[in-house]
Image (cartoon, rainbow, N blue to C red; front, side):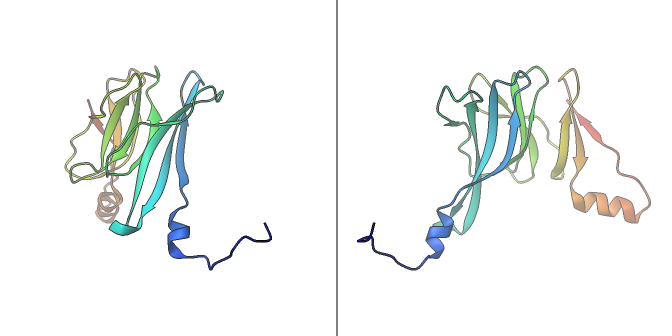
Length: 152
């Protein structure tokens, strides 16, 4: 250790750090999916991908999304078969769902504006969505309360 060379801490050292920004435990308590954010200095942007691991640590964590769009707001379907999240994969932030058994995420909503929040209905046939903040502010200015939209 005495022969170790030191150098100043640099921006690329800071960018090498990854951080967990969100996590959701499966309804049966056996798995956790978490969002890992990293910096891509060459492209001057951040990216967040989802990872999954068994809660008991019996398997290594594995990355389950690889899209350039960052994922957030993780919510398990009540039966544990799908994990929904928000992502801007095609121009507006929408709700997507990833089948737990594997496969590609599917788009659940096609709202004209970005979605700020959502939740599963108890029967999992719908998701309730809330408008993006810009829409909520406009509704407040007009004295109309924003009502949740329901997407099937």
